[in-house]
Image (tube, rainbow, N blue to C red):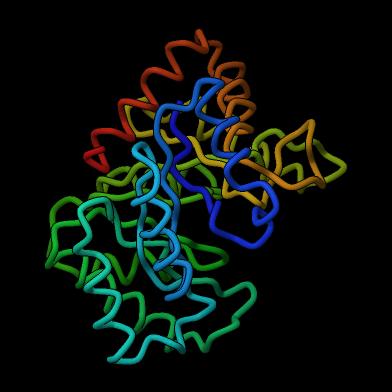
Amino acid sequence: MIDTHAHVDFKEFDPDRDDVIRRYFDNGGEKLINVGCDMRSSERSSDLAMKHENIYCSVGIHPHDADSLDSKNLAKLEQLCLHYKAVAIGEIGLDFFRNLSPQDMQIEAFESQLDMAFRHNKPVILHCRDAYNEMIDVLDGFSTEKWHGVVHCFSAGWEIAEKFLDMGFCLGFTGIITYYKENAPTSDISEMHDVIRKMPLDRMLIETDCPYLSPVPYRGERNEPLHVKFTLEKISNLRNEDIKNIERETSKNAVNLFHL
């Protein structure tokens, strides 16, 4: 299994980072992508990838920090993306739920990093919250027939899913899909489950987004890469398919998309 979206560099793992990584690889983890979300985390992700053979990194500026992406930081980010273990630009995108950066600056930063991904032939890792239609509009503004990347932590319904799939994207699913009525909006979870049942398996990725979004039965605790197995189990149950097949195919998807 491959956790395609982790933040093991975050301070939550300072006390036991090596143990967390070892636990993952000792219990079925094949490879791991540690995802940058600002300049410092992109640098830390690069350092982590250098230290561990089967850890890769992405570099990017999250929409929360879009207002920090000046020309100087953009140049630094471009240098980081040239690292041989930097497999993607991300996580980048739009977040109109929290709006921690102005929306116009989010769009500008998003477009700048999409352009960088094009120039360096890198797939993208997209963060989107309350802005799916706006994100599709931005992507439609680029002259490309097919995109290479993943919509991280996908949480919309089939209509939106189809649009991203038609554009060439994979969809990534986290522990959110394991939540129950009492800790998540039933309609949202039901829509995500519908997407998982309908979508082609060759476009699906599994993620933790650790230390966030711990799956049931660890809801409320710190998440870690090993917990990606609970997302895997839930997908297997929803699709009524053998878990080994889901594991094999999602790992193959990750290897193909990110050239691991």
